[in-house]
Image 1 (cartoon, rainbow, N blue to C red):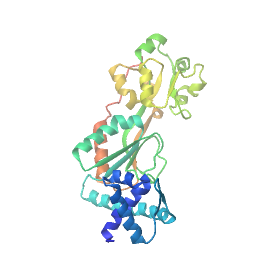
Image 2: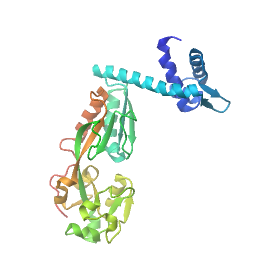
Image 3: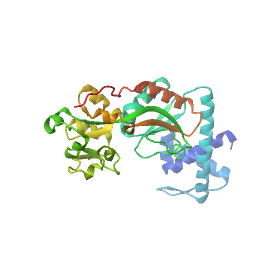
Image 4: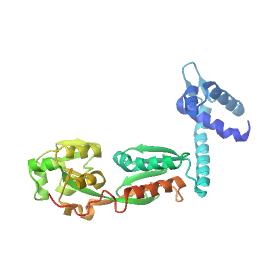
Amino acid sequence: MQSEKFAEFLGVFVDVAREGSFSGAGRRRGRTPSSIGRQIDMLEEHLDTPLFLRSTRLLTLTDAGEALLIRARQILDSLADAQQELASMKGAVTGTLRVACFPTFGKRYVLPVMGELARQYPELRLELDLTERLADPVAERLDLVIRIGDIADSALIGTRIATQTRILCASPAYLARAGAPAALADLCRHRLIDKLHGADLLCWSGVLGQPARACAAQPVFACDDFEGMRLAAQEGMGVAYLPDWVVGPDVKAGHLVQLFPEWSAQPQASTGIYALRALRQPPARVTALLDGLRAFIGHPPGWALHAAAPA
């Protein structure tokens, strides 16, 4: 087997192992199952060992195949890193841009920027993992992970792209019906919107001095999605405590009313929004995304509330 073909055959082998069939790997590569099978045959002949146990229904890796799969992934990852590093030296925006971030933030701010990059750079491929878990750029081979809040992992390089400020807000209809709270303590007698999973992830205890669920009135609506909580506030279900990048535009448009703006002016109500990466010298595609994000968000951000009046 020619050495320049070996990496290609390893890639085919990894795809077959991932898909569990020649046909699955063929669909992934735009090839026929028979051509994929021939390449696996040639690789097994070259290595002088079987890599798969074959039956009419499925393929199973042999012990040698399991060992090769680990090495093959490492080799292919190293080759991809080398290609991307050389491309970044030339300033070429190519390769696959992999990003993980919160679902609502990704849909509102990252996806539009990715759309513009796709139009500018047709050879660029894009992957966006919309997740609330703390994704690991190193273990998951991600170019960027967007996180909100304190950065605990000093091994990662963080770029601050914006600031988040939490806003207390409710719909005009809700305030007309329930009355505007005169003091923060009054919020315990109001209907509240809370996070469905996790322990006080909305930080209500910082506002109330106790978790929302310890108030006299239990939260009337709980959801695991910022967009859902925003819509609940617009529907007049209760008072929400959400980031300005979620509800700032609604307050500006009059769909929601900001409560206690002096509370949001405190340092404890604000935190940074960071783009984290593992590589000190990022590929050109990462720089392009960061530049695009800053331009799309604006400085100050378009969602920022500068002079909101109390209800």
